Structure formats: structure tokens, C-alpha cells
Image (tube, rainbow over all chains, first blue to last red; front, side, top):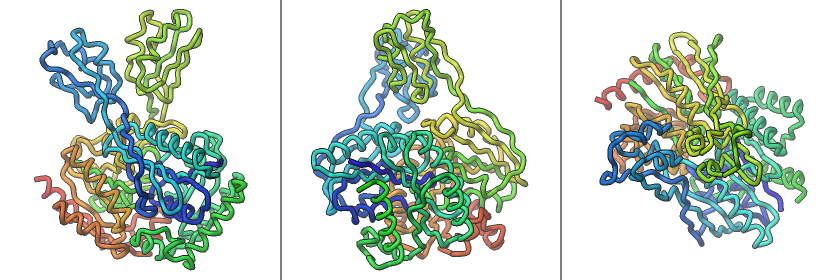
Length: 287
Length: 277
């Protein structure tokens, strides 16, 4: 079984558009949406949820005012500025447990906190693992890991040969969690100066974690010079550019219709380019 | 006045709105809190910068004092310590610097030492002051860098905070304490879905908000219907315009080439000020 993550560094470059189309083109894959706080893949794949599991993230400290002697030691020791007037601010609390430990009268409880839900679903293209982090919650990296584990298990149980992972933007904890044990990382970039800056950091992240890098340039015709610069940079660094997708209004129309663009407009220029990209990705993964 | 610019979905134009707003106002401070992928400096092109390291405290185990009791590893909620047999390991990138391990260690065998996880850059291109954070590639925790960026926040005057995308802890860290939050979205089902999530976060924080619809003219009417139902004002619309997209691709804030927009951004700031009062 192979696993590939679609990532981008910069948000909004077309990760989900590409992933959903790959899902529609795949024959034997499992899909994982690892953008757990602003997920979009479900809007195109329309999963029917078969299993829901509560996700408990970090715990929450709660001060029992009856037992509390108002000594203030908890507030003094809390490094997250989460305790004021003998109350814990649940937004600030990072669930470290220091206050619970130092309280001399054991007035602080350490309770489970449901931070989101993980889902296992069925789509018309294959099984899907996804999740929803409660807005504003910590610990999306841990939830991403759960989504990845579920996807891998699904692939093993159902004898699927590929896990297709839609990654979150950025390069921080949820992205790192979406890259463990991955065979290749496909970075989707737009030919803008910001896009190039973020591409370099995303490729740096793949190098850091020794993940095989691939690049797809989306809306490549928006700025030809920047596209050439990206191709040159990739050539110099031994990174294969597997796709050049043109700007195409059919992509937005497909999104409004709630369908992957290759399904909505199979003959559109963007669809043809994504199909070519998919063939190169498959070749690269040996599928 | 402290205005956070957030979005939920990435790539909707947060940085573009933050920078063009700042340039239109003249004197303003921009805090780029998207420390995983900071971009405001690409548009503002500062020449000289002051750079400071962002460090967090992480444990170091003094092997000669440690008896491998494992209390620290059992205490750590972040799995940043591992003790088995006669081995005690620290995974510093998982550490949240709570200091708990050194408190629970019965033999005073844990000391805390600073470790660099990123940088803060401070620069003044023209009348705008820019402070931006940069998380070291390979480091997971953005929040301490965002806190370090906000440490430089002006007490007076207009401060514009450019938030990372999403709706998790880095967004909370950026938006909390602001007087107003502008949510930049695009009129598509993806834009709408992520706007709904972002609205929930901003409501929890009790910050008043308004929406900027970017790339208007594409997509559908879902975002407009949602804003109307929720009573969230649409403060500005920026049409989908190939010229704006091309300027952005070259790293040029569009108010520089399309000066008629400066007035609109100043009006936006006035409406925000009125909404706060």
C-alpha cells in the first residue's frame, strides 16, 4: 500500500480540487481529509458517515470553588496565563496538569474534553476517513494522526492499494502529522511570489522528514515568468514537476455543483491537465 | 484600534486585505501572525530588518541525578518525555513548556533550557511598521511565535493582525484581544463552509466581526445568504479581477497601481471604527 499527501504551504492553492479529482480518477484508494479545522473534501466527495468516534484531545483543568482555598499557587505556576480569579479559562488552558498537581488541597479536577469527532464514511469512489475539530480547539495534530490511522486501517481491511491524503495548509503540527510514513508529498503551488516563498518552505519540510517531493503548478498561466522560475527551482533541486494545470472557470463551477472537476467537466482544460498529473503520480508511486 | 484579519479557508486574500488596508491608512502596524507561511513581507518588501530569536523552555535531564522513576514521562500530557529501563529521552519539539516535569521530578534531575523554534522580524517599510514571525521548518508549534509577534504590538494607533488560515489554536491566539475581526472569504461553497467555522471561533472569543467578500462575481450566493441570516455585515467586496490577481502574483499591493481603492479601504476602516463604538 502507498500513501501520498497533497499539501501546499500556502492555503487556497487547489489542494482539495486536485485531491477530489484524484479520488474520482482512482480505482482502488482510500481518502483521508487531514484538514480537520477547515475541511472541504467532503463537500465534493459527499461521504455517507458509517461510524462516528468522539475525539478527546488534551484534558481541561476545572477548579472546584467549594474546595478551593484561594491560595493562588495554581495561577502562579500556570505558564499559559489560563487562571484568573480562581477560575480556568478553557480557551487558554493547554491541559498540562501543572495546576492539578500543585494544588495543595486537590481542588482542581482534570476532566476529559471532547475536541471533535472522527468519521469513517463511504463515498461513490471508495472509503473515506475524515474529522471535524471543534472550532478553536487545540491539538489538531493528534486528530490528524487519528484520521491517518483510520485511513490506513481501512485500506488494509478493504485491500486498497493507495491512501490519498488531503493535507492542511501551513507547515506546523497538523501538516507534520499528515506526513508521517508517507511515500510522496505533492505540493500544489500557484505561480505567485507568495506561492513560491511558501513552496520552498513546504519542500524544506518534506526534505526535513525525508518525504519524496512532487510539485503541481495550479493556474500556471496566471504568471508565466513565475511558473518558469518554479520549474527552474524544481529542476535545480531534483524535484519533479508532475502537473501544470491551467486557470479554468470550470473549476469554480464544479465546486458550486459539489463535484470534482474531472467528473463535472471531463473535457475541460483543467480536467485534462489533472488527468495527466494523476498518470504521472501513479507512475511515480509504481501503481 | 486592533483589527484581526482571518478567514477559515486559506488563499482568500487575508494578507492582501491586511496590507492594502495598512497602506491606505498610511500609519499602521501590520503583525503577520501566519508564522507557518508568512507573506506580508513579500508585498511590503522591507529592506532592513531587526531579527530576534524566539525561544521556548524545554527540559534537559541530568543523567547523574535521574533514577529513571518515570514520573516526568507519566506526568507529561504531550508525550515529550520517555523513560524506560535506564533510558530517559526528551522529544523537545513536542514540549509545550509547561514546566511540569521539573516540578514533579523528586530528585531535581530536570532543568529547563531555552531552545530556538523560530524568529521575529521587525521592519519599517515606509509609514507602515511590519512585524512578522517565522516558524523554523520542522517545528510544530506556531503559538509561541504568534505570542512573540504580538509582544511587539503598538499600544496606540491602528494595528492589523494577519491571521493564519483554519480555525484551531493559532487562529485563537491571533484574534483574541482584537477590537474587531474582518473575515475574508470567497463566494464559493468552500469559502462558505470555512467562514461558518471561523464565525464560530470569533463568536467564542466575543470579538465583533464583519466580512470581506473577495473574488466577488465567481461562485454562488451562499456566503451572502449566510451573512444575512447571521446578521454579519458585509463590509467590502473585491471583484474577481485578473489585474488584481496578476499584481498579487508579482508581489504588488493593488492599491499601489489602482489608487482608487485607497479611499475604499479608508472607508472600510471608518466603518470598522463605527462598528466598534
